[in-house]
Amino acid sequence: MFGYVLDDIFIDHRAPSGHPERPARAEAVRDALVAAGIASQGTHVATRVASDAELAAVHGASYLSHLERVVPGKTGWLDPDTYFSPGTWNAALSAAGSTSELATRVMSGELSQGIAVVRPPGHHATRDQAMGFCLLNNVAVAAAAARSAGAARVAIVDWDVHHGNGTQDIFWDDPNVLYMSVHQFPYYPGTGAPTEIGGAQAIGATINVGLPGGSRDPDYAAVFDHVFLPAIEKFKPDLLFISAGFDAFEHDPLAGMRVTHAGFAHMARRLRYAAERSAGGRIVAVLEGGYDLDGLAGGMTSTLRALTEPAPSSIDLAPLPTPDKLSRAAIDGTLAAHAQAGSPIPAPEDTK
Ligand SMILES: [Zn+2]
Image (cartoon, rainbow, N blue to C red; front, top):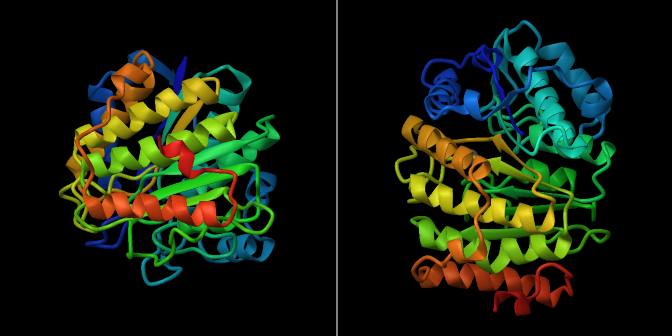
């Protein structure tokens, strides 16, 4: 049974006027998923706040006590991008806790797949720092919770247009969490070079593909076909997360990619296929960025369909038209960086 987190608590994180990470984003996703029949397709998972132990698994004690001192019930800024309002702390704790709850229930077998429609987003939050609209790293907290619930290995695919520097930072030296990101590069937050492949204890467990601005659906699909899917197959995670941002959408105001609703479907279907092959079907998508309401609504609806419809076979995943040569070069650059470092995942022979 499919499970989902969807609650107006996440609308109570109120943005200053004109800020792109605004409550209307969650409302647009909610309305689109309700219209797509999410309630008849799965189980609603009630929100809960993250426990102190869940947060402490990925965030530093002094950072958490700073947030607890500064954020609850107040309005202000943690950095030039990252605001808080009186409802923010409860939303942030609920985003991390509810995503963890969803992942834990998928690990127990009670649920087969899940979608968490949460805000504030999480993937820029490092162990000790809020940034890029993110306070707590929801997918990281949930990945750690899944490990506590019995997952030996967890993989995270981050298709938000920005590099998930926070998630990478948190799991940099952890060989049991495979972090893979495809993002516009160079771009905010500046990290995500192909040579960033993980710490000494976890070489190969971080994989970055930085695509040039203007990349389209075939470029993204090629990243999945040549890099991410072979890596997932080799890593054999017990659970696969999607850091699902929709700011690579063709009309997104914050970035310069050209991904369509269909492009998000191509990516989600590939990951559903990979989860069925290598992760017992266990897959959880977590909302990150995305600032065009149509991109959010269409992208998340595509993701819902990919996760709830029968899993595709390899025949259903025919390659898209040839990627642009700059994108192909980016893919080859990532594979070469890993090969040069002797990384076990991925390897150039995987590209066949
Ligand atoms: Zn983003």
